Length: 362
Image (cartoon, rainbow, N blue to C red; front, side, top):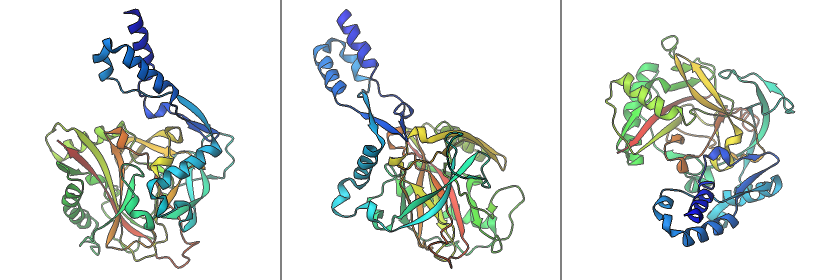
C-alpha cells in the first residue's frame, strides 16, 4: 500500500496542468520530455492494483527548457508539418505591417503607441505578415485557429445598419450551423460590427450601440478569455429569452467579411495559434458600448507567425475561433487589423462586417 501511495503521488504530480503552466519565454521555453513518460509507464505496469484511479488521470510528461533559437527552428518545422512537400510557409509572399501589442515589461524597447479601442499600455512592432491564400487547404480552426471560406452574402450592399445586421444574421446562422454540423447556433447580436474606415459610406446607427465604427482594432487581441466564453453564452441566451440547455461542447466562432472592393487598406491579420503560448497573453477587461467581459491582449514575441488573406472579395470570408470548451481544440489565435498601404498605396478604404456565434453541440 505504501508503494502504491508513492506511485500515485508521482503520477498526480504529472497530471496534465492548465496550458498556462507550460511556460515559454522570449529566452526559450519548455516542452514535454520523454524520460518521465517512460518511468510513469513502468509505474502503471508495476502498480496496476491502483488501476481505477489512473483511468481518470491524464498524464503530462516532464517539461524541459528549450533555447529560443531551437524553439524557432522547431516551430518552423511544426508549422510546415506534413505539408512540407507542398508549401514551405517561410517562403510565402509577405508584407510588413505595424501591430500594437501589450507591453511585456517596463524595459521593453519598443515605441509606445495609443490605439483607439484599447486602454492598456501598448507598444508597436513591425511584423512580417504572410499571404495565407496558398495554404488555405492546410489551415485548421483547431490548430492555427483561422481559415478562409467561400460564401457570398446577399446583403453586402445594404446601407441601413440595423437592416444589414438582421439580414446578415439571418443568412449566417444557418450557414454556421451547417458548416460545423452543430446542434444549434445563437448569434451574439450586440457583437455584429460594421466597420467603415472614413465612415462616409455607411449612415450612423443608433448612438451608443457600437454597430457602426469608423475605426479598426489595430492591436493584437483575443476577444474572449476562456472564463468569459460560457458566461457570455449564458448572458446572450438570457437577453434573447432562449431557455438554457445542456450541451457537451461550446465554441465561439467569429466571421469577418470584407464589403469594400479589394485591395483593402486595413485588412485583418491572424496569428497562428501554434505560435502563441499563455505567457504571451495578458488578462484585461473589455468595457464599452454597455458590454463588459474578460479578454486577452497579446505580448509581442518573435516566434509569432502572422498571416492574412490579401484582396478579399464579397464571395469569401475569414472564419476564426474565439473560444472552445474543448481546450485541446482551442488555439490561442490572436488577430489585429494593420495598415497595408505600404504594399498597396492605392488600397480602398475598408468597409467590413463581423459577427460572433455561439456554436453548441448536444
